[in-house]
Image (tube, rainbow, N blue to C red; front, top):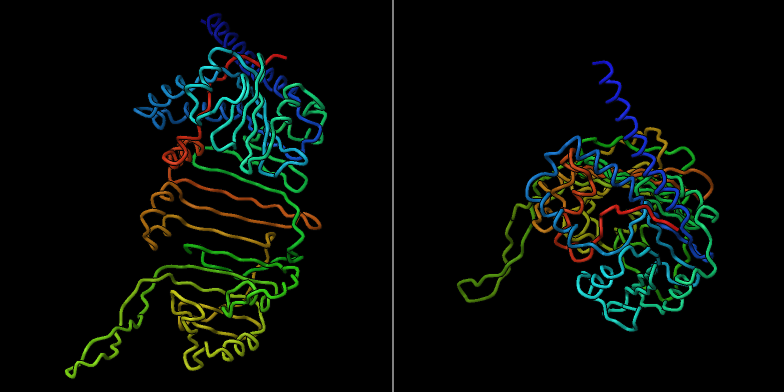
Amino acid sequence: MKKFLKIIAAIVILLLISYFGFFKYRQVQANNVSIPVSTNALLKINVDELYKTLALSYIKHPNQYSGADKKGIKEKVDDLNTGLKIPANIYLYGLKGKAKTTFFSTFEIADTLVFNRFIQKKSALPLVKKDSNFFQSKDSTFLILFNKTTVAFAYTPQKEQVKTTLVEILNRKNMIKVGDSQFNGLVNLSDHITFQNIENFSKINFTDGKINFSNEFINKSIEPADKPQHRVLNPESTVSMWLNAKFKSELPKKNQAKSPSLLSKHNFFRFYKDYLDFEWTNTITQVDTVVGYEYNDDFERVEKKILQDRKIPSISMNLTANDREVSDYLKSLGALDQSTGKISSAMIPLYQVYFKGNNGNVQLSTLKNIKPDLKRALSNDFFYFKVDFKKLIKQMPMPVIADKLSAFSQLEIKAKSIGKDKIKLESELLFLNKDANALIQLLKTFRNGLNSSLNFNFSVGNPVSK
């Protein structure tokens, strides 16, 4: 029995070594890929890590991937045989001299006949043949050029002329290996999706019931507080947000139209100092006066006011500002009822909003008698945002929005300063279903709108050889 167990253990170890060796080999081969020397932005999709994550999720929660959907996915994969070799990592790159939204990439062709059949008959994006080996979409935003071994493609929403660039890429002119380029830091990262350019470094990972996103970027228009503080908001709020930072002043443009609204961009930056928070706690009932008309006994048209109950969000916004200056501004426009603090609907439409100002704090709220607690707590983050989608859908029933958001549970975003003019933003998107992988759930949520464009060949295929 012991001998049998040793044999089984040896087989398992050999299989694991082969498994990890196979993926390691694919990674090494994929990272030998070359990109143009003029690359100024690089997006890496780690195909193998996505496969591993999805496989582990399937093993842990097989019931999430069974049934009709499983059969449908298999059929789709069979139908989407592109004839291309899918490497361990897919690199898409932007180039100097091209629009920031224009990206290029290359794939090796595994089966020429299958590939030709795919682009001419099975491609979800109809392609028009321009030359023997050059195709483009009808709107000229997607173009492919290929030879016997490789296909180069470009996606250019601005419809740039890119055929010459595709020729150079296909002929490997002025190319450099990713590992020898300025983007070598992306090579060994295991994150599912990474992106880097001169101003940004981003990561995205899809796990069961969760999407994690982080972005380090340069921002010279905002100055985070050295020691951020914020009011302690209700953790059960539907939506909550705070910002403890200054905005660098912008010179007003000549002849630029200025809105009198207190929430217009011009007036916001005019009064705002260094702190803002927003909180939507629940739903309240607000009584609106609806003006109608009727005819009296003398057949004269007379005005009639009707009181109407309306469900609205319980919202409060606080910002550091010269409260006397803001109050005087509202009074000068005749937009503030001094006895009640109510701001005119012409200034802020949709809801009845009340003004309260004291000690350098301005509060705008749909609650008439709320008193702001100005005590603050220290934080590492100068910005925070959270939305509870379950409560949002209940409190603001809009079928179109609810249909798209019903799969989500919560979104949380944080930002902190990590150096001069450098900010790190981290976010976490949670799904109601904590067992199924977030990428699969995301594709299912938006499948009606994305089916026509997300037709990938998900088969691993053989290791890419050079």
